[in-house]
Length: 219
Length: 185
Image 1 (tube, rainbow over the protein chains, first blue to last red):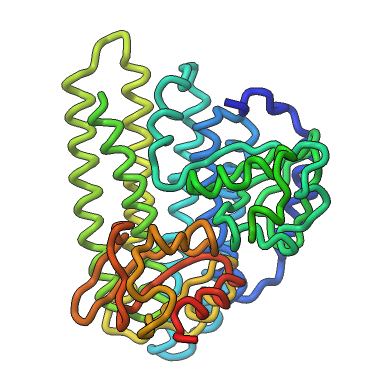
Image 2: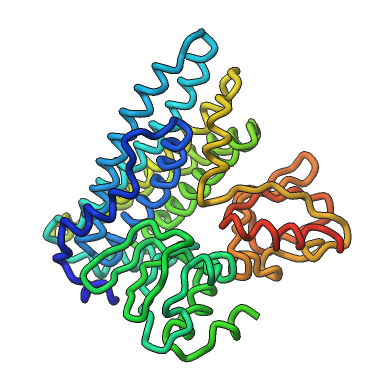
């Protein structure tokens, strides 16, 4: 697999810069819960990707997200307590906190899963094989020079909507971009980590490799 | 070991379906979907137990490191399933859901939608496989309700019929094409 040619020493400061967007000091309960829900899905995908590609940086991002989730959990607890005035508020907020806490538990389990690669055991014969038969799998996808995907945002392409391929992370030279959104622009040379059905991946592959035009795929 | 691999994959697929169903049950305050999450949790537990038994029975000393890794993967997956159960549990209590929960889920990047298939629409009479919904519009059907009956994590060969209600997840912008697929235009 392609995971091993991934650069293992991305600059920590660069990573931290990227994350500053994810976490706001003063966020409402509603925003916190949305973030926690989205993160719970991203972190599980990243953990599977980390063990399938035995990639230290993806595992590091799982750890980072987990610690962000801890902070968010603390904030959402404080804000909920301040918001409860009556018995009914307290009952409803306790349900809301249970959802938040479940999302946080997912990141804990994901962190433990990603830790597997720290053990000095070669995982290649077992894990990629095991996870390769799941309904949706994680793949790597390189965007080659001349590809129609170059310099297009995910929103412009409507990538997930027309191929079912979801971008989990992007490696761009020495940097990583996690939790891509519709404004994220793809560049030639990018290595994408995606989650997809095999069919969707096979549809996108020739476009990424500049062997087919995007227009032919989405017709 | 082949069996163990199969069961681990089954655990992974089931835990992901559980999480989708759990968030969906929360969004629609739907007890039936929440109850299915409880049924699936039992399935994940049984699978995990079977994985553990098989690994212990077949373990050779030289392979202990690898066995341990497989056990850890199974453990994490089982905890994903537990988290889904905790979410579904909120729906099954006799307390109204906090209104912010629904709003938060609606703000999420990953969109949940419920749509009824109309007579003569594109999806009427098609299987999920034929519709190519997952790869053409990126929508994944997590449940189908037909009258009183439910199909969770439905088989790709199930033929959709007018009157079926589908629960799907996918990117927000796919709701427009999906709407076109369920309506009779």
